[in-house]
Image (cartoon, rainbow, N blue to C red):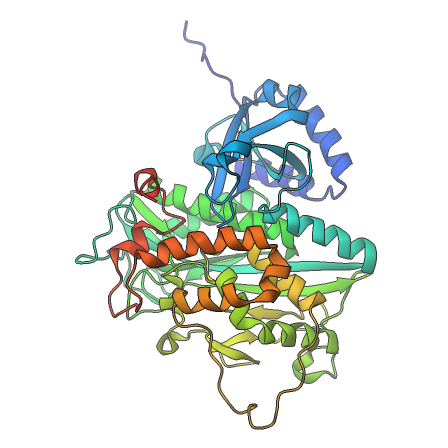
Length: 474
């Protein structure tokens, strides 16, 4: 009678890290599927498979399938797309999930519960054709295409900043008269060994390391109660998956500790905001084509052409990089804001920076991407532009000295985005229209001008805030 009733899989962090790194090394989708399906069928202690996908705005959605049902139904995993913002209409609600087996992740049971593994899926219509508004699938298809046709591969490492706030569900209960309560008054690289911020960073770093993220460094950031945990360079689709998992783990760890981890770009005025500095490079036949020892700032012609195209389209791309009302508070020049449409090796107010690097690490750092953006949409737009767009014509000499800035409010960004034929061509007319519609809805719930205080609406109606009652008011 004293025997435990449950016997679900619970592994040590060392065992998890070993399994996840081995799974990460399997690049071939068919091989990954064969190996992982066989493992799931054999391992009796796995009870459920968590299937993840993201919507048009980049919110993470998860379905837990009973393991045996999942294995028996792999060719027919469906969900109601009309219940997901920005997806299908009611009369065409059924959408399919196609599992990407190279994304499998074995999970720490103290964060996710015992006996679970996680996979990402791409979305298809009833006819199994890729769904236009699923940017994970579109990004993956584009990566496959440029590798097959041009031998190119794209790599990314995100630097995602967030804030740790006092209390559980601090976003859902936000009151502009009170604001958020910070848990730490420290600053850059400064946090006492066992204070709440440091313990949160440690627990989160331990969990994502066990999930195969290959951690590099973690620390308190410039603003009080701000944090950043860096993980290694990898292919862009995996990196975008990791962005969503990372934010999920941060939120779960914070909640377990009685606090809230938020990735609002600027939750508090008069301190630095949060970015997702996006380090990107291209390789061909295993060689980093952004490196040139003799090139300006160590960057090759290919690298300079790539970033020049991004700068040229910066105002049009801005809404995909900064997708919320709150994001435009961050583009404030008083707090190292990357709102200047220019490139620099040192100036952190520039939209793009060229970090000091060598043949292995040469890259560009796009600093204007917000942590609440849809990473798949942002990277799809950035890479398609940097690789495929035409180089801009040389500007007239009288314009070269004129300072150019990114849009100052979401309203300005929406107007530029809507008027752009280039963004219609890039995203497709239907997807562009749906994306604009959601952004306009949120913009209309806020004053046109941001003002000096953070407003209730920009927090409570933020696309990453889990509050179904509020969303049902749309």
